[in-house]
Amino acid sequence: MMQVKKSMGRLLPVALLLTLANTGCTLSRMVKQAKKQEITVQPNPLAASGEQVEFEMKATLPKKMLKDDYRYKIDVMYEAEGQKREHVGALNFDAGEYLYEDGKPTITKQLSFPYTPQKNRGVLLIQGTAIDKQKKERVKYTAEEQVAVGLNTTPLLMVRNNEFGYLPDTYKATAEGPATLAFFFDENQYTTKSYLGENLPVLDQYIMDNVEQQSITITGSQAPDEKGTDLAAKRAKALTDYYRSKLKALDYSNKKVDIKTSVIPHSWDALLEKVGKSALPKEQKQEVTALLQGPGTDKEKQQALQKTQAYDYIEQYIYPAMRYANVEIDYNRSRKSDYELYLLAKGIAAETVSADRLTEEELQYAATLTPLLAERRQLYEAAVKTTDKWPAYYNLGKVYTEMAHKDYRPKAKQALLAKAITNLNYASFRNPTAEVNYALASAHHLRGDKLEALQFYNYAIKLGGSEEMLHRIFSDKAALEIEIGQYDDAIESLTYSGDSYQTNMNLGLSYLLKENYEGAIRYYEKALELKPEDALAHYSLAIVGARQQNEGRMTIHLRRAIRQDRSFMEKALSDLEFSSYRGKPALLEATLR
Image 1 (tube, rainbow, N blue to C red):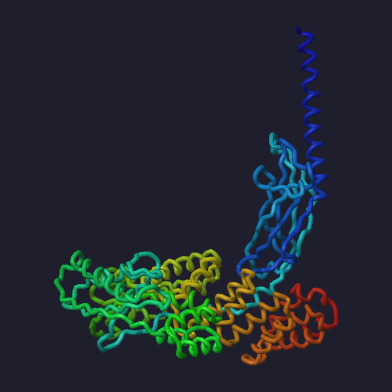
Image 2 (tube, helix red, strand yellow):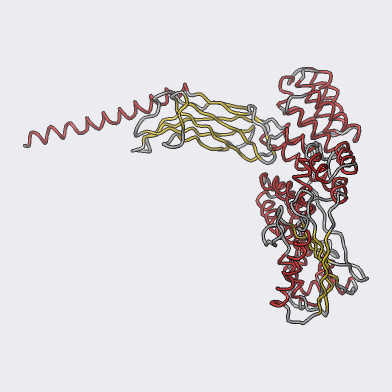
């Protein structure tokens, strides 16, 4: 027995050594096989898009490289010149994380990292790691490999606005006109609803107001494509019934309430008015006007309208805004002096003065009397707390947006924009207009919330508004679509954005990114007609020249861009668009003169 034990004791170290040797051999074989892995990156060079650099990486391993009890991963890093290396992500070849393509383990993954100008020149690196699952400290690494260069910043050359102001001051010494609340309905429906875009909570506040009397007018409307001819009347009646029922439950002042209802009779005039104020191209407006003012029955006109180029726009953006009922409530108020208003508002904000000393409009107006953002924020916060009305939320959202513009700290800026979005959301719930939702879309856009911004741009367009407002919305919506690589969608949006500098610049960029250089030149030159000697337009045309290998165009426009804005000289020297000209006379001549 002792002999057997001695023999086993001698064998154990040998077995351990064999196991370790086998582990080392397996890891080494995996690393050796990894030299045949296939890595593709799209786009390459990497391109900045808004606040992010987004790309797709596909990794395919050799057949039978993966082993039981072992795992393999690929770390992805970006190293900018003069900057600390940044870990972007990893592709983990674990069970359930990869698929087989032609019998080879494959992962396709979307990756991104934050953009800053300091990262304009750099390389994307990968490094594979083979790991023993049982003893995780046993690893072997592949050599680092460069798989892409960066960054192409041309997609950032779009023109954005995203500016929205405070609400115009409507506080007047004379009696104020009626307050109007809009209620929108689903197609062919007349029941009230309390979710996004409705004003029922605001209407409840009017019902509870302690006043002697209220004069209310409720007007119903419907879109031409809706079934039945009595929907407008049913919508007006639904709101009348709601008001009466809530009045019994919420009103304790026994005020006198006079409610009148009316409907907008069916005619094509309302549609023509909205088409006239829409962002449709002039020729499409003329086509719709000629059709609706021409001969034929309503049914024939509706059928003909569906065949026009403008119908998709009308169905998506105009008809939803015609399915509504308006509630008008008439109040009278008097005005206090600016100094008195300011002192009372400060007292309300500090909770040393009763909130009922000022009306909603008086408190809102008092906030405009101070230029200090911190103080203005306090007054609008007091207005939110005491009135719960949409103008207070909207203006508070504007204050937070202004504060974000002035803050240089990325995290603080994001936090301020988040607060702006919260308040603009509340404003949107209470007052669903194109202006409010454009502000909300812009705040999301500034924060980098691309999907949310796109949703609110579309919602703002559907609500309708002035032609100037719709042009602004479509222009910034197109800028966002360029950021996310939807160039065809951007071009379509720019069809409805008017003939502005921003429109032509972004059309030029869209065609440039689609490699339609003649189209890009056409629109950049139109932008220069509107804004002569614009540095960005000339710089963009220089990029077109570089891509076309047209040294003359590149040199002339780059020289003009730098003449107007010296910062473009430094940008050109690091821009990948001019990499093939680096060190050559054409680029030196353009940048040094």
